[in-house]
Image 1 (tube, rainbow over the protein chains, first blue to last red):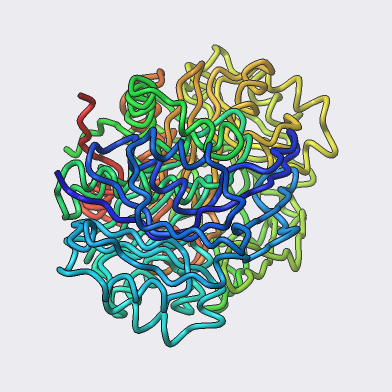
Image 2 (cartoon, rainbow over the protein chains, first blue to last red):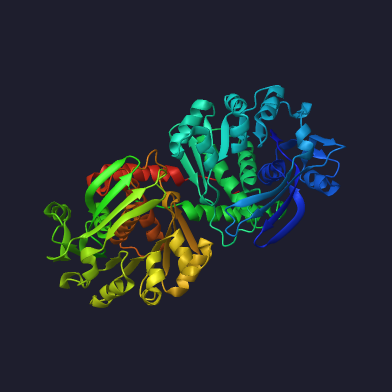
Length: 309
Length: 309
């Protein structure tokens, strides 16, 4: 059995969409990533994060029920948990942040539990690059795969740290806008090439409702997003994608382009569920047969026969 | 041998992109559609259009060289040809029209040559819906497949005529924005359903650099656009797609969802060439082996193996 170690936030989200308001619910990158990984893989999954005294026992229980190890989660007694409130526009493609309270996260110093220092698969959720690097340095052996999520904010405020960090990782997972800001290139093909030069051997560029591209050397693979009749709440789709991706890689144990193609489809598949309800609700409740049936949708969506003669 | 009949414009285009200016070159929907169809199919291809006295002999010769029948093209001696000048923004995703001179097109009354009145495949390029309908009514027998391209402008100015026309056709080919305006639905899945109710059994929604979706009953197929290092000039990509699509359908003779999947890939393939140079230049010069090699790119871009167990 392999180990998957995930660094990211455990938080309160409050989401407003044209379809309703969520109230305060479980959010944070580590929530989506770990729960998604668990849907795919039976490996050991550990989370490194920080929470405040207000983080409810019922949320902790969710992770326990999913056999997700929280020994790397620090609870700060005089702090509140990270809290984000946002409102989506009518087409759900844009959102405005209404409130961000960093709270406990401000004092976050990740500590990798002994048990996970030899994890084979390390997913660095979106955080300050220095914290992400700190986790890598605490590992007792180099993981087989280090995946990194980051965002524009760190390109604006911690450019040098991010550039240093990129040299240490295997796969960068960013969206279109982030890939462009990082490389000053509009073409995603050219952007991926530039990112290779910065360190990662693999690059995934997420395009939201337009799917995701996987790049490695001269190879490109495209996973569409499943066309859905209704997207209810896009929050967490990207983190679900990353979690499903890492879960699939760990499950198959294949770290090459072919293995990652499968993992990208698996991540897209899970993300298509997450957006159907508020927060992690749909992700938590999906059954194995639903995941399989939707994989069949992905196959019929993309597979074709054409004569080359 | 089947017959493909194409109605659309033959025009002068003048294109400005961040990479240069084209000067006055051959443009118009019927140019791209017919030249693209010819790259795929050996069937008889006829064009119905109108040109002015200024339309150069060398352009006529291009079509003759490609065995494209122009007996349905009227030349108006006191008119100039349709002329469009446009400038693309830096990212090539938006363009501004600088000049549109309708010229000869204002007097266009399509006349289907006797020889093409029994064409099996009819592609109605973007024109006033009344003209498109007029062509259908002139056919001596109902084509096996009638495909229609239209645009927002006709939704704004000829809504009733467009709605009537939709009842007569088999497949609508529009872009995202047009699908949404036609149906007042944001979700493309829901939009396609509504379009089915308006008449067409098949719907293709083009998403530019994000590919194209094919809908039929409850089936959905997605063809990505090939990720390109550099797009030089997007003009004509949509018409090239439509032409490649119709050419492939005619070549295979299969009018069902499976056949259309192949055709959508074929259209996307050709469109990926068109955008590499100004106007029809790249489309004209591509060789069969280039088309086949790029089909292999499409296959490796989209095909994957995943265990369902």
